Length: 327
Image: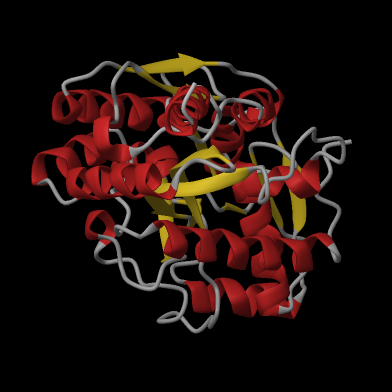
């Protein structure tokens, strides 16, 4: 058989083999089959809702099914482990949240690396935390609360929905930034913590706006400051922490899409571009707001990766000072 024929057949065989190898997928025909977004939480929650909205909009854009699969448990680590082990071809991705980074410090037995096992794809939601007190609290603004904290005439406490969550992290970071002492009172969920906050059992909390908005609207809670660089449109009369006198205090709950490490860059870039286009759509932004979520400022994959790296560094510093482990 001529050498040229042998080389041609070898090349064809190699191309055929590469087509089945992980990472061989390209954006040219992506997506050619249904895409699965795995969510590590129960249906109906904030992360699940935003994931389903994004999935629905992407399916319209791609003319292809985008399926949300819930794999709840272990604070999202079951779903993350499944995606870390998935083929890196863009057809299985993770929709996760701030807890993804926190799990590095909360759970010492992870089967994956929160950074190296994944490729950042797109940030979808970012909701800053809010400092709230009961409407019956004597503190009308952050300055009054800080003055009382520093006088130390009484013991203060703050509630969260559990050890290692973002509200817990927000409270501990607030203590460090302000040099104050506040007892952390963890609850098994947000509802009872809010009830005790309204009733004066605890003095303050640092929830997301979605968790507090109805209580604020009902006049049961008072918001003192927003942990964001700018004021929120929904709480335009509430100052940022910087405006209220506490510099370098921003913390938020984000939702975003991660792919298995090794996913082709052109596919990652395509998904990122399509997600960012959705986030600029006024109708999508309104739909997210109706869920209690806020559309994130669109980021490129490298920018999202830089955000995750900065966050990990902050959480690492905090974990060195405060026990964030669940046990």
